[in-house]
Length: 555
Image (cartoon, rainbow, N blue to C red; front, side, top):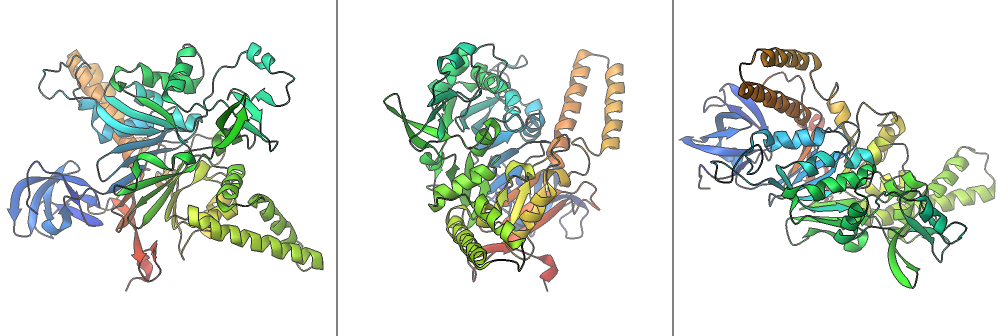
């Protein structure tokens, strides 16, 4: 590998220590992990190379890095809610959900140094100025479903002049104002009604109601935003922020469904494939026209959550499931669709639970009923794994108790990542969810990760150290002699906040499709040579699947 000072290089080993001198006994400067980006500084000493990585200059061995970018999935600690940042081997950036606060913005600000990025037209920067650049490009943003703790964090991102978005994908469900006159226009009609503020719902031939007002196209979304310029609906105001930002010239909106098969650009021709498993639409005829509609599977919350965008990402031998807030009703629905069954798995689970609770006091008929139900569930699991089985899964709905055990068995993941926060009223992750993730996970030691558990205190940690830093900044601001100095200090504290959000609590997955690590930052490391807690997955060729690389079983 011929090295260049302007080249992009990446750590190729699971764990590497950056040292002050070209020696294995050199003072540790930092702990680097698989996939970390670095620059070569032009110096070589035998088997060692001088590099800059994670803000430090030091020495690593030539064998510890290469020029191959890998897949990186960062489950950002955005507090209560979901937020994932993906960088593909082709250096494409995808953001899936952004929580409801500014934490995703702070993460991206830290990751891409937005505070110091000079963008033409922003903060007085001219296109002719030295170092002036274009807004940072995020090719794809995905809003899994219209719940505040998944989409509202995009409002700051969409409006920021230093960020540019290409396409905003969503599940087609858009909350909008519904007037009294509109509701009265369908009053008394049995086959059509307004489904809360999600639009019209019509009854299909099967007697089920379907959400008709699915916003599929770019034009439909823009027309809806334009029709309600002053609405208090936060979802539409978030979309308006994207439309109104001049940096987003050429921005497109698109609803996703299983009919699309793949996320655009990830159809299997590149290293990464992203299949779309949900939402599942159905053809409904209304007004002499065919519509691709979403079935009403419960109340407003259950329906919009249940029809979350669900991805299955594939790279090499690895599969990862990324979904929104699936619930029991939607998991029943997805298993019906993909397994070709006519009965809800949650009903079968209830039958088994109630009959087993009787112990030995079962009649012969009940024994037969139990056997049939158990056999049916086993068949569903076997069939379901053909579609849903993955190695790593993001837990749906932050570890809520609304899930199907059969669906978890079908997923059969080695590792589950839970995104949850302190400031919520649901006690996520729920104790029964944690138990079920472990019980129905694959292998002898299924792995559970949680952004909330990975951070032992609230987002700005350590609290007392951070408080001391804030007080010092306040004192420095008061004594600053110029506006320029105050601006510099203000930028510095914002960078400190962004770094705190970015570092603690985030779960990062790094893989080339063969080597797989899942890591989290240690809040109080014992030394600069061990800042990360790293778990590895290894592919077992004999079994044809990944398994946890258990360090307790190593010889």
